[in-house]
Image (cartoon, rainbow, N blue to C red; front, side):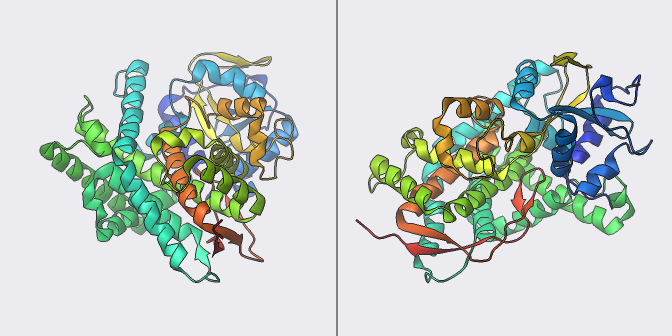
Length: 464
């Protein structure tokens, strides 16, 4: 089975649906340096499989051919950009859509816009982002409560006890996202567990089986995936109808119901937020706590800022912007973990990067995982060092890549809020310690996640 990163599947769906068949004059994409296809039918598909993931394939591609490189997906050329300078040239005229949302919706078979073109897509994006912002404002006390429950559990545990980050933080993310997105029904743990079962089935199957047809060949796998997707969609539609009748205005779905979106579009946006919001939030928190556990100095510096800004008070929304070092810690977590290692955009009009012409409707890959550890952009790129974000040039590069500022995907902004609340409570009460002998391996897919459970231990912080 050709089992590799989820973005490879995105190529199939996006290209089949949106890209005109290209007849290149040579075996390289528009003269851009890169790989010739190793197979007439599959292009460089097997090369990606052999590398283990699309990210690892792109690392080797850019190492060999430079910051602008091409390869073949089936019979179609793909252009990959692997440096800040080249991304800067390309992003500016192509920033109207959110690449993460576009790819996830394509995988699920959803439409990105409202069906009327680019303007409607922008409008729908604004509705989606506004709904998330509204939800966080209305439900911030609930976020505090859910985080406090987890921190209380860790505080009451024996100090030598091993704490599983993935299990606990995915649970926190799932509870937070479902309750904020869909309302108080999901305060019942049994509802969350049922939702999580389908969520996990969908997320684990997306990206598998499409390229070689293995999903179609396995009737049991296909039935399991389709059942989970159908059940999830039915739940979301049912919640939307129930909330509409109740005329409530606290959850994410309530904000969407106030818009002109159709019932189907509301269900799709709830699906994207619950799927992506849970995974991004969980993994941002997992990686942040893992990296903090390996750096006592960073923990102490963060604790000092939290005490200076918050004292003994709980965090509030208006205080979050004052926690500049906390923001640096989360930025460096995203960079070091390569939280989203690849993004993609369709070339809307013919463009040019350096001397290379990129034809209209070419799929352009942003090799973010390559750029985030490029030594020309980041000093000591493999070191976890939040202090690097004190430099204006570093902040600009990070913003350009879409990880901060106006172009940040709304799911990541939501994740930053939850992670900030978690750090504000946890670091003032506990010290985090790594588990000796633990080796961290990364699975670089749609969102980078540890391949195995990640463990830490905690001890109580001495009160001054």
